[in-house]
Length: 444
Image (cartoon, rainbow, N blue to C red; front, side, top):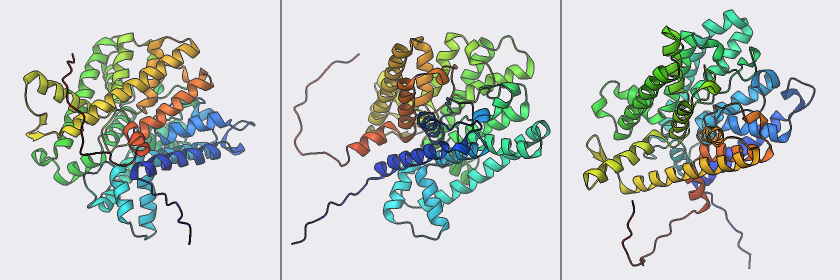
């Protein structure tokens, strides 16, 4: 009698988290090659792992300045990891399979559906092709716009490379930059009053962060907003509020020393970039504690489902607020735009909020204790990591091994999704006919 072998069948969630982990490991090994750095010494494994994780998880936190530490080969590896991480490992793998003429099976389609948060499996291949096409168009357009500024300043070859690099980085909400040639870790501060760079970067961040499904509706249904799905309406509404309201605060509360165009551009840019791009055009260390807290909250909220952005997502916050309003009004259901939100969505939203708060606050407490740094500064850094943002108050390059490992874990969980990790670890549905007796408990 033949012994039966053990068959391992991976779920969609397990495929996603293992795919991200594999790309991070490969990227780390490539960045450790001698010619990946500009100096004589190769990057250590921890430096390469941190950088690769930050790139694949489209975060932007760095321990070495991208422009001055990494060679052209190293920068090419980083931007490739950003593109893969922004679109999603599964989406890129599916695109390669589609271009090679391979047939996409049902399991692959199901994994693609989960990877881009599509509502159904039907039409997923067509949607993936649409995503790839629009990504190329947006990134090319952004690069052309920025080339009008970068080529005159850096020369043709370097100007073209800088334009492509920053366009991909912005669209994928990564926040990696090559402006360390001006001053290490300076990000886009040298372009704080440049209209072309500011507007291009902001538009790429917003477009990349509103989600693939929202793009499709905007492209196909154009201004017929009444025909949009409830999710798209919520995404656009919440995104608008999260840009306008913080911009007003920054204009009157943080940039009162500036005037005219520069003040407007800086206010808008700092309202957009925390969700979840990581570029900055102002010195964040000069912000008030209130301004730091506003950005921390924006980083935790992040972008929208099925996008290049991270964070809890705009729909999660909308669901939580909608549920609170429903309870205040003593209504039976949470609803938006004449559509009811399912109960399981509200349960997931509450779990996601708790998870992000535990990860952010818990990580900050450990780093604060180990490094003896102020708690608010650590909260900003951990929110930036778990929200896959990349903004920093300047402490990341100075952190020790334990703190860096914590940020690596937070970046990874923030990109693949905490619930995805939990569902992957506890696969299968556990539901039985028997239930525990019910007893009321008072909350609040």
